[in-house]
Image (cartoon, rainbow, N blue to C red; front, side, top):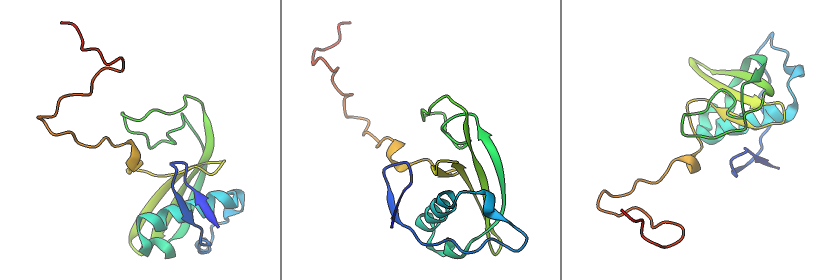
Amino acid sequence: ALVCLGWGAALAATPPPPAAAGVDAGEVPAIVLERAHALLVARDPAAAAAQLVAFDAVTWPDGGLGCASPREMHTQLLVPGYRLRYALGERRFEVHASSAGEVRLCGQAPARLRPAPRPIDTPPPAPADGLPKSQ
């Protein structure tokens, strides 16, 4: 099965490992758990064994799911979702998710939103109408 992460990326879904002892993830939709696990594995294959150690139901202030950078644009609507905390030994991961299954690993913006660097000696792109701007 393929998993869409909301950024146009698709990953092969692998079943997430069981939650840590004492954590009942039954409230979290399976699609959210699957996509969060797929995102962790895509960022770091060693995280395949990471266990869910805690989660909170949250309402995110916008479509950035609490992880947006100032240069990103998102819907300006409240988004119901989850804050998922995973552990792998001493390592900790925090995934923010919408209840619909969009997931973000906080601290890492989607690659397609980062503009490619432009050499200093390269002129800026021409205006959309093709006419030079008047001074």
